[in-house]
Length: 266
Image (cartoon, rainbow, N blue to C red; front, side, top):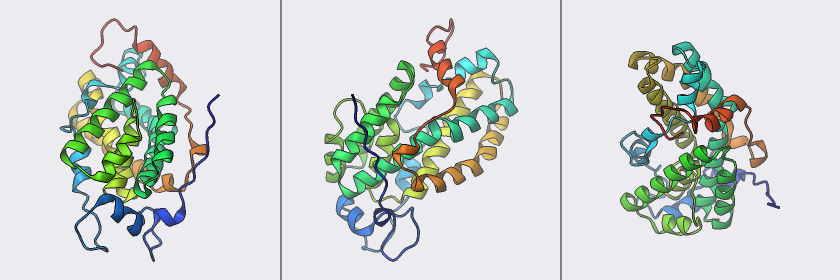
């Protein structure tokens, strides 16, 4: 039996001293972990997020469609409108929301140096993958992301956090811990992570041919307000709020395994 402990993100760890913004990490806890050479009150640069969450970052996201390939074959995704609806549900009711919660808790655990809590969040994230293909997707990307960040943005705190994660590493946990260790504020981290998730899925949909690039860009723009709203909500949620209601997409991940022709690994 696996015992799960609910971990609420402490308000004092989510806001800078003297600030009402719940998305900003504690300057005292983050500065010690990040090893930054800037002024104590200087905000961390967001440039790493732009690098980490672009298609060129070596996480292999191009190889996965997160059930979109099956949804296209089944006729669930036929055009721009149906793609936007499908992705909107994945974002608000499915893995997008859950992954953002996991990333937020990993961010907090890494920022304060709680390796035990970080390992627990990662174990939960891996266990929540609904199918073998989706587990492979999150774990392959998570390990690749963590290895790439450690190689290009080294930090003693990052090495300590990574040492707590033995074996598989879920992608949202890897993103959250890297951002937390490097002192990146939570709110933009969540926005960038969720938007990158939407963009990766739209890119897969374009390659599967139900829509063109311009239509795909409109879908991203259509979902951007939802990304923003979800990113603002996530810091108020605990691990008890994890869950999804995208059953058809989850079943599609099983059916994808037996598709006759496949371009993607999930």
